[in-house]
Length: 229
Image 1 (cartoon, rainbow, N blue to C red):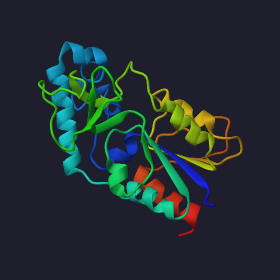
Image 2: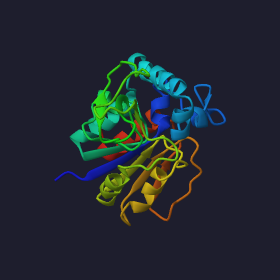
Image 3: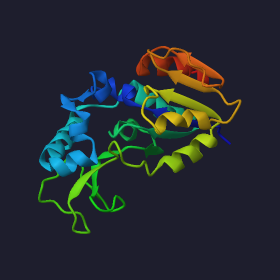
Image 4: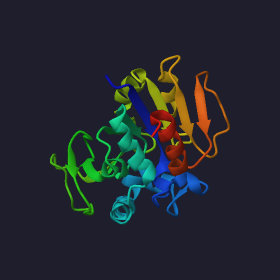
């Protein structure tokens, strides 16, 4: 039976495909304050702005491609049982070939009911307009976990990490909770690899190998170390 490799990915892996993160520039995301576009209060206050913002982010997905880090993670499925837990709302892991991807913070290509996030609708590349309604008649909104909302898939993510034989962190600053706390659920004695050019070597009380490289360069190094290929 293949060993279980559990991977937590953050904005750093998508950044190398050209997608920005709000942490790049003093709390701004594509020129917007996060409080104005990524909170439930923002959607109540100015739904038109919020919808336009996510419509633009959705269109970006059509002009970016998975990078080599995404593709190498998919290729690791030839050697491990790979489960990816991502903080990213793009679909680059899926397009890169990965078959098991858990999106903690939602997905840009999906919308959901404003009253019930279990009522979802696939959008693909199309916009959400102010007139759009979900199946229950409520306003259709982006299926994104905004700041201040609970993370419904957190328990599922914890179960995956608890079953890890190897844990890999790629492109996450470990600043956004509760996702940042997942590293504490890695079983004692199981190896942890962190790929992050800015990681300062915190050990988290675990057996940690830090690769101070970008996601793409770090994945090239780690792929060889894990597989010998």
